[in-house]
Length: 323
Image (tube, helix red, strand yellow):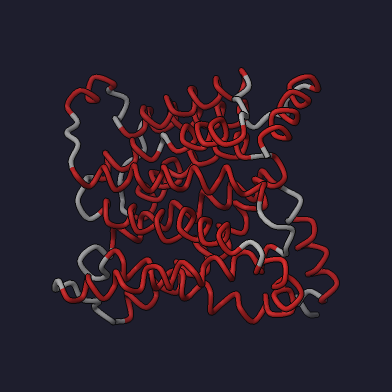
């Protein structure tokens, strides 16, 4: 008996998965949480811009063979949209990760998680500024509830601890990463009509080129990469899961349900991150964890609900007038 799926069965599973936005976005959040845990784990071993370069050059190399047939067909269209592709490369990959990895070198985990929980707000802001798309009442309420859940988890259920947090220059980097990621998220539905692999391959390639000079500057300033089995393993994992797969899943999820409904799934990142800390780092599970998880999941489900017919019509009208 064999357990190897036939090519047709693998294709049918891939086709099914590509039309499951909620599952795709949950997996994206899981992979991004693992990325944060690993990025903090290798602080001092891999400089931030070197890690960004490894992430996107590696993703380009991994995706290129699979994307080549689509790239040959899509290149005439993509060539006409080079400025847009460069903007997506910076906002979604080079700038987002460069700012975030640099910020994580200088700030505490508590600060980073609190700031990251504001990600959906930046997505909503860019969607409003660029295309006039407003949050629905359920999306606003859902984001607020899930944000409260993140705060409960991060502050260990003691909301008075919020006044004791001190912010520093590293927090600015984390915020800038979220600002540019918000623009990327809002722009995904406006991407050229090309295959997802073509889009990812070209934009990650552009991002690697953007970051390369910063790696040289980083090296000249004394930061160096410690190449060993640990850094190699972390690099391979980050390239495959939080990068190639997670961004393909995120892009597809936004295409299917829109940026404002997809963005609240970012709140699952600190939820998964705290769960990883419990299971992998031996930290203890407390009641505030369960309360925070319940609030986040409630908020995400509420924000991701499909809008009513009048609300959808209003959103489509706003999008059409802004495109």
